[in-house]
Amino acid sequence: MAEGGKTPYDVFRKMILPQLTAALGKEPTFTNVTDFLLADDLITEQQLDSIKSKSNLSDQKRGSEVAHRLREKIRNHDDPAKCLLQICDIFEDEDVGSEVLKKHGATMRSKIEETPKASRSDPIKAQPTVPVSSGTTVSSRFRSVSNRLENAISSCLTGVVGKLYAPGLISLDLKDEMINSHDIPSKKASKLVSELQRTLNNDKHPETFLNDVCKVLKEVGEKPITDIANELGTTAASPVSCPEEISKRNLGTTDELGIEDVETVTTVLNKALFGATKWVDLGLKLGLLMPRLNVIGEGGGDAYKHLRVTIEAWLEGEDNVTSRTWQTLIDAVEGTGDRAAAERIPKKLKTLYNITL
Image 1 (cartoon, rainbow, N blue to C red):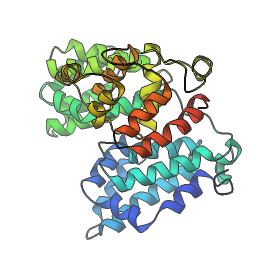
Image 2 (tube, rainbow, N blue to C red; image 1 turned 90 degrees about the vertical axis):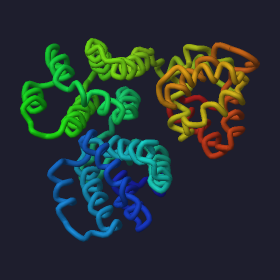
Image 3 (cartoon, one colour; image 1 turned 30 degrees about the horizontal axis):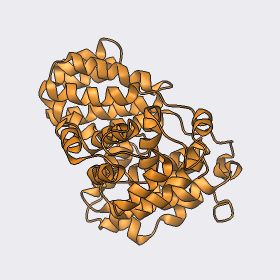
Image 4 (cartoon, rainbow, N blue to C red; image 1 turned 180 degrees about the horizontal axis):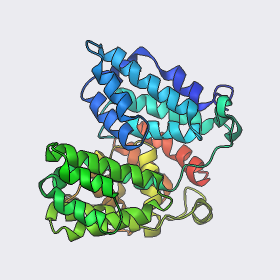
């Protein structure tokens, strides 16, 4: 039980400290975080405009304004635990780039994951919690490429909007706004991507929606957009094994992992806060050779894609790979210098997949 079974609301409220609010209100973190919060429906445009309209706010006071909105969002949410975990995802996101927020996000995540389910709902809205949907990973992947996607579609926005509207992936109102608004293309592109993110978060079948979006983006015929769609489409199409299947297949440190476990491994690394930018170091520690890693790096995409391809090569036993177990992965992660992430992996395996090492 986390500190006597505190609710998500209490967990977040206890973390609203000067260090957190100062980091939250400082640029560029403020803009990065609020962009993600808007995309995930955790703050409204009206609330954000209200904060921005207050002149002469210090970083700490501006951060406090955001924290207050998030606290109330958690309080009034149907699933406070899920809401807090969404906030943790954003705080820990590499694109936010704040070590302070990442640390606080990890701390809050650990507290809520240790709290029994019966204690997770807020006493003000005492309802049983619902597990975080399978769309969480898909949502995070889309968010990780959102900035690149905005830049890629800005120059051909009308064509992209038309393609998305035809199969009903965006509303008529949004289509008209994108075409008739006098905003600059980059701002409209940002709004479009945010709306896609919001729809993805709320869709009952996020993998299907993302695959449909990727299919349409490829039809635009622009290489930068196609590259992003291919990157997302591969991830979205990868089957995710259910926890029961995974726990039956891999019960301990000596069980060999296979290519079918790639989604599980990458998810655990992400949840353990292993930095994707260390993919080369990890590959070397796992037994891959530099020529192969050079090819991976030249293959396009961001660090997350490189990390995934590196894990695939490891799971397929390429180069000098001699072992493909969870313990091998833990040792390799620690070998990169990220001991904290290595220590989190067993806990994440237990929490996510009921695997005990």
